[in-house]
Length: 294
Image (cartoon, rainbow, N blue to C red):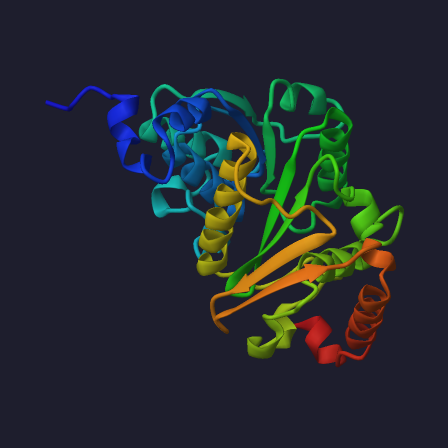
């Protein structure tokens, strides 16, 4: 006979790092996560285990074999099933009392207000190349005063940026505007991880093709992202501990064992950032044609 669910028992081992009254605060918080794939699904599971009591989640995609190397819900039993449906089941299996709002059509201008209604925090789980959706949701968070976290899975580590009142906006930091998608991708990659701690161990550069919206990924990076984003979420929701807002950023790379704290005042306009972008553009232009066709 299965034991009845008890919130206090299920999350009792959080107590110590989280005070009892703080655990009850987390139970009342609502977090929005767009994207239930690589990082988004692991974010949901991590925060559900932290005891967050309510979520708004969005995704329109289904699981497939190329998701197996990193996505929490990707298994033979879930191939072809909607990601949002699978991850909702996982979250409710951890905490049957979770208050869950699902957006199976994804997010866009038509439903952003509803997606962010009553939300205390937004965590980015969108695909790297979802430029329009990402820009729209970060702009909406800024307009509503909702803190927004992006933890990018880079190499075998994580790159963290927090956008919140008092810091730089997403638009100002990345400066996407109406630029071509390949330039947006370059600015996003270098803006997320200006220290570039991961560059030294890329063994096959052909796997990175921004024009074709292709890039390698690892399960380790997604797991680390969830830990980093979950910790920032705890600090923001409980209003304790230091939170470094953009244009400050942090990159932790498990492969090299290094941590870099970055500061790019002016974002994409920063002279160091402009130089990094120029080098990135030159490298993309100089790639052999065989690499682009691979």
